[in-house]
Image (cartoon, rainbow, N blue to C red):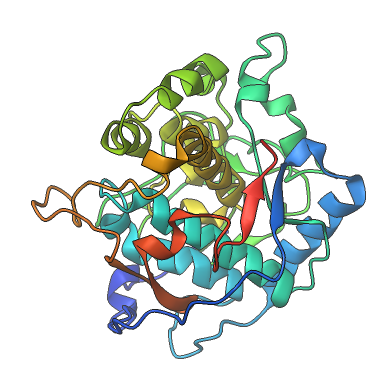
Length: 336
């Protein structure tokens, strides 16, 4: 089942980083797209969305010169893997992931013909976590037909040792047993390795308390962006960022290669939605509020003119470009 590469992933990606500093010319929104929670979508739109993700997994990469990404979907995961240490525990964690979601939603529409009424979808974990009478694995998000498939089967996958660090999380885990991505083989991960393997999950209920609506409420009570980003950003201890990853388990608990699971994008869309709601609560003071280091444990503070890159996915943009979701290139709002 496992075909390990002898070359660490990040070595194979030498030259992958975009060095251009230019930003795209400002455009205008031709429509305002709506993000809806997965279970609030029409069934035909759920199926259409899933079909578009499968299409992205079958499209060839746009940059065939790089050996490891074998599909367009892989290219999104590859960008996240390569830039992980530059876009986590930094001031631009939230804007970088916001634009990654925009590019992903654009690809579903423009490259794979998704025609639903939304730009993308989000997974509101609080709606599952607050229902303590129902196991998390029974969430509609894990439905085998109108969702992303269910739990992994313990014992069906053993991750290789990653000499660079970043192996998968703990607890029972294995290849997902059903659903539209059951036979999907990822070409990247775990961590910064390049290996061919199934999508691995290990749904764990004990993460429920990290994403309760009461926890989100406390996050939204943050007075400053600095307070907000610190409480959100941590993958390991962050009450909602790490919690959403932890519920799914498996490769979603790998900070580098979590994008192997399509649920990565719905989880991060909801994380962005929480930030959007925080901005909306005091737009005059919060819409362009930004702080934090430009690099992990660095001393230089990020500014709105800081340039973020998205190799193989799209042009560089500044932090300022993505702060207002209603402005180009975002052009979206959330179903509150």
